[in-house]
Amino acid sequence: MNLHTLQPAKGSVHKEKRLGRGEASGKGGTSTKGNKGGQSRAGYQSKRGHEGGQMPIQRRMPKRGFKSLNPTEYQVFNIGQIDHLVEKYSLQEFSLENLYINGLINRTAKVKILGQGELKAKVTAKVSAISEKAKQLIEAAGGTVELV
Image 1 (cartoon, rainbow, N blue to C red):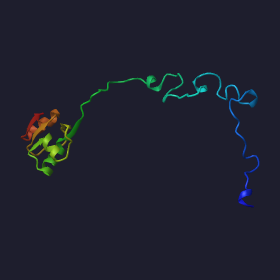
Image 2: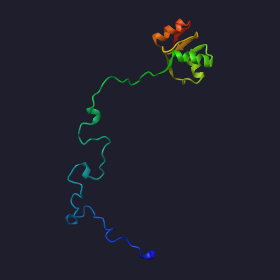
Image 3: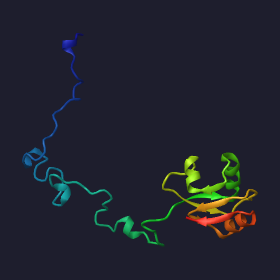
Image 4: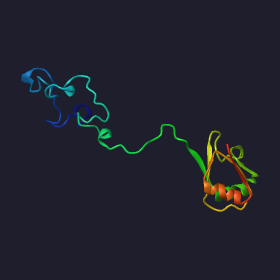
């Protein structure tokens, strides 16, 4: 056996049947694509999510509630976290500027304080929003609240 005498096994290699070359070829006429319609034509592309005329899933599913197109997103801090941050960064004032300087929020963030936890330090809070409970806790500790 030499390299120039190698041949594929008998019957393993055969000519591909050419499509659309007359009825006698066995695959003439519609060239195995069936009759009419987009899929039988050249250049056919199906759209992503197309369900063949069936009502699409996004139209079959029920719509519920309301979703705002421009929601207000807050960076949230709890009262317990404020106590910890005042100690760690020795803050006199819990304001957007101080939080940004210490790398806790980004430049455009809005801050909201929520009332979970306990507050021991006397703090002046200058934030975008605050819950009623948090406001009461800060004022009870001797601090003040200012909305920016």
